[in-house]
Length: 332
Image (cartoon, helix red, strand yellow):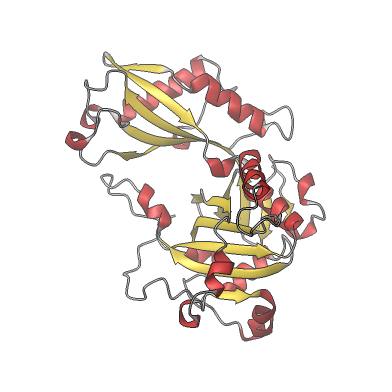
């Protein structure tokens, strides 16, 4: 599939939701449909997660998708992942799910319209949510949902309602201007051969292609580690970073969030596709940061000041991330 380059796009609203977007020389936003899965026993007291055969569960769902013609093509096995089981089955409450997972659809060429992603995703949720699967005589119920951060219209409605009541600034009507991104690998935003920590310079260079930046914050973040399967033995894809970008104009904020929503990030040469979380800032991140003591605020860099420091190629790191934390191995 042909990809577009971000710096060549004059109007971000014209970028189809099905088109890969290259935001840097080796970073690409990949379009996809992502569904969140939870598996419950039909009879809450009949089963513990230790009794689930993950292989059979995956095959059962793949078979359903194929025989029901939910998708016009067989879903690759690696695109259906059960990523977390309850750590201690004996402590599971009756109303808790047994299995968490994700289903990704990367091949969107079957869509008739270039912007048919949302309609197709909603149709899949409606068709799959609530189905029952039978494994060795035991029935399971599947629940399917979409993350809020993958639903741009849902987020837009949220900030319109938030500011309609004058939240955040007395009675004066305001519009959001700040995007928060969590769950992207730190070294993808680091200076090559300089550090594995996220770089303010690299991050600014990438995000200024979306529009003029007023403020930028980059800090290490272990947010995604909470989704790791604690019992699987898999390596946590660790050192993630959190990026907070404040734009000068609402339009740049709006169009950037629309592009970032519903996509995953991939670095050239890596097999990892990072499912980051993106949302809008309703807590006044930079406003609150300016009210904090200076020694706790060195990671918040105003755009004009940053540009004056850029030729020195200095990497700014957050003091909120302890230097003595043992780095995790990064799995790609």
